[in-house]
Figure (tube, rainbow, N blue to C red):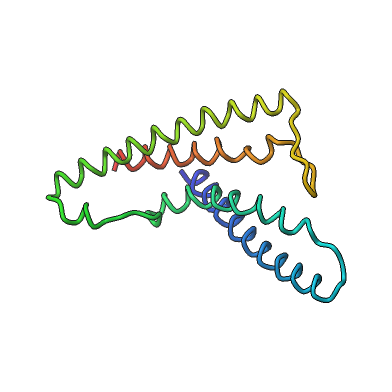
Length: 151
């Protein structure tokens, strides 16, 4: 369990560093363009890729700590037994949806790598790179939903 929690913590830290680096890079980009220093077009593209990556990295940690976005108004207004049943159903549904993302995300990565697809903008990267964290992070989310079912 310690290794698992350390992995979630490492992903959370990586997400925080990524968001901080994006903020610095965008600030630098604005200053550089206004001073006529250099063309930093890559900053926008790296930010486009970084936002979903940061979101994927932080999601399992937030769910683990019960700090994810949720609407408690309905749960709080229901009788305890019914609220627990609804929570279990939501966790089962969340786990099933995550399993679908793991499956199809993995197929997408395999297919993209097999085809050698590239994303060509300012930067050129293999297409599968941008999908690499989808099955990993959704697997961790599925583990969290399963953990919540046991509680």
